[in-house]
Image 1 (cartoon, rainbow, N blue to C red):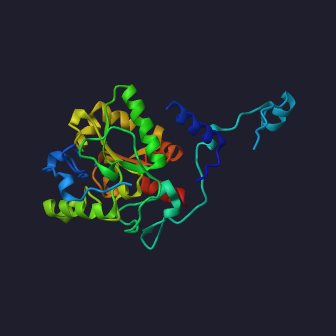
Image 2: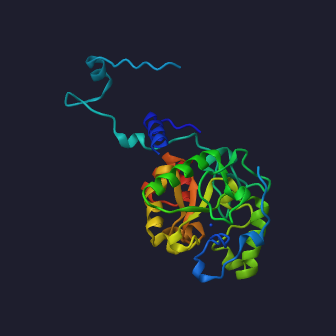
Image 3: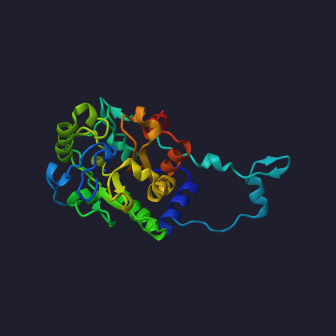
Length: 290
């Protein structure tokens, strides 16, 4: 996917250079204080793995001529016009099926699903700390997202922020067993508030990862948002291309409860925009693709 802004490409390179449950839980998309925990390893099977650039500076005369003038003085380009990434408009979905051509911008929600047989071709194991119960392909992400979470975790650790991954990629088959376990435990209506039906989970894209910290015993709980670690994620995740996908303010719009642990990779340029505009991703991508 291309981005037209030279400044944004430079920004992405600069960041590159610089830098949902517990170890006994699955990842119910709800506060763990509201229901008993489930050992995910018992609710679903483990998955096996698998041109030259001219650097010569222009003359003063050339520089002046290339810039628009106001009252006889050259002006600099408005940096705000450089901040909006653009790609050719594409459909977000076709008959309720997600448009896979959107790559990392793919939209999956309660109305839009992935094909049951969809699995990203570039899954790799993220080189980060995971809770012990997270095994096999649940440690995997698409390559670009894996590199980004590695940078995020490294920088977080440098700042004294303790985080571990609890669940990354989940296949359609895995989500079938997981969702059914939640329905059996809490009923379908309640389960739908915190867990995605098979095909509707962002984890199947390979672009989502749940994280937690020792401060909440590595549980997936809304209390994470009140911790130092949760606040750090809310303030800095976008700098690495991630967004907190399910915000408290947008529960009605997304259909899911607040999940301070659920990170979704959409690339740095778009993540910065979503963070700045403070919109749910569903609305952002629909407006962006118009």
